[in-house]
Length: 76
Image (tube, rainbow, N blue to C red):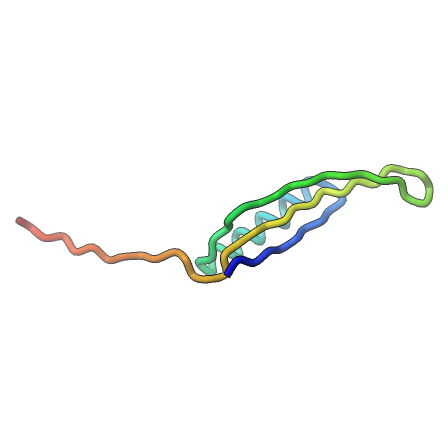
């Protein structure tokens, strides 16, 4: 089943770190990343200073999708 996870950070490095940790976690569970959508925006805070937002939507398959097959060598 396709699932999503949304990340939002004030700094691009923080977003990279969070996504990389999530990908690592997903890989350990043999789940597969399908796609990543990235976006940036900015807006003024109450002091009229610019606040940045770096966000990403990660789509992943929560079914176990990686399958390994044992192959036996046959001498012929």
